[in-house]
Length: 414
Image (cartoon, rainbow, N blue to C red; front, side, top):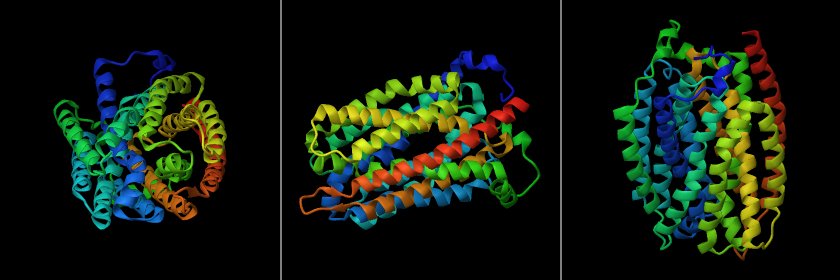
């Protein structure tokens, strides 16, 4: 599929491809919701378990660190098996870990449950992106990534408000049990309907798993992509774990109004995601990435410096912030997907996912160390976290410029 001509961008997806996109988006919804749910639950979970922001940051980061380690461990054999089998296996493990979160009733048990969940979730994410790259040509990957990223928005519109409703009486475990119930249906659909994805097995060189891993981490153009991924991950992990507490205690949003903020933000992102994906294919991935960086920087500075603010204005700022973030996520995912060779995709995506998770874990810990809680419950130094994010965004903009030149140059030569 990599050799498709310029008309591929306008080609209609087959009915099977549409079904695969929908299935993978639904799967991503459950995985993203599992991570996302900790942000709005933070305002409940911290007092319920009597933990500090730094301890809460550790709950977030242990998931990321375990996902990162698992991705590195999986990289050597990620291209040696049918991707469907890998996806089903690790998705099952992810659901088991989420079930443990639903059964945990102490800080220590929750920490262990998040570690187990992260081990499997990291490999699930990388396998999804490897499958996407296998099944869809570069010219339409912006559209595909735009649809897949609506899973992030859907978790805001559907999952987060429902989770907040279920946990309103302090029962913060209930949302995790909901994810397990939904995920079981998705897992059965994967097992029953997804076709084998094993064309890459015919292109595998004769080398061991460790040699395959070393080859991937030593390839110069891959290293460039890994470095950009490391910084791209910092944004969400720096801000999102603390956003609900910031909305409640600093901006003055009533806890009962939190679902409205998430619903409005998610709804705008659901509309914007596919449009951003189409724009990335039509205008160029880097052009859209540049727009996303500019919007993100502007809105992060505004958001992290807000005081008590009317609900309507908070919703507007939140929506614009996430549109900027989505523009970066979608365009960067589509652009970076063109870096690895078909025979290295699984390994590259696994390592990339690991780097993303570990970088995010470091960012969550850094955010927890920067932010402190005042005597009134308000978060202090949240604006400093925003300025750190601005710095990493500017660096990634430069790095993605050179990646874009390399990708477009290689495609022109081919």
